[in-house]
Image 1 (tube, helix red, strand yellow):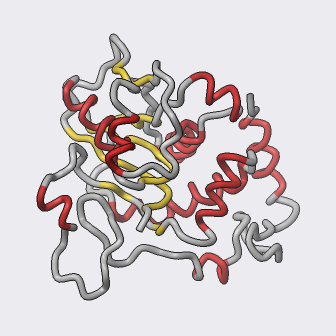
Image 2: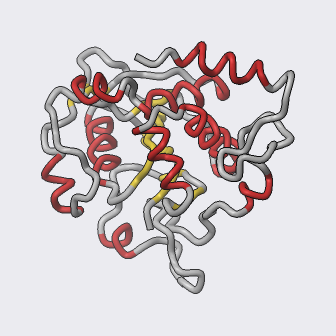
Length: 239
């Protein structure tokens, strides 16, 4: 398992002696973040998006919501993100998840905090990381959603609640159609007996939202068990 405390503590301490180094252009970042301002400004930031699910919309779109949310509103209240899942964000998230480049995840979490806090009308009571089946967690060495949740928890002072687990192994969602994703998630997640979410405002933490299948499934489970409101916080939204 990844010892994240040692990795991040040492990394943050290093900023006292030298500036960060940009993870994209490799030049000194000249600040306590491994991303220079030039590269940060060139990232695929979301501008026009659905007010409910954050789906990127054309600039001339005359509706505040996408067609899917108008036809069938999702189980969650809002998806909060600032980045489009496009180059180089896709490369950074892949490196974070599959190559154990934890500093990529730390940079993306810092960007979320700097750009998305202004979108929050109120802070949630608890953070719910998207769970990972134990076999996949062992193979990867960590659950990236849990690492992000801990980052947000440490900064915002919001507790992490493991209210949902992943008892049944499912295929990876990557590359599946929306219908296949929904079928793949049937009975994959379960509410943890005794978890206290009644009457609470919750934020589900994920790295990428693609079809909203996972987000909808988890939000529906939490709502059935008494949650008053469920938001989705993610690093990036797929076009």
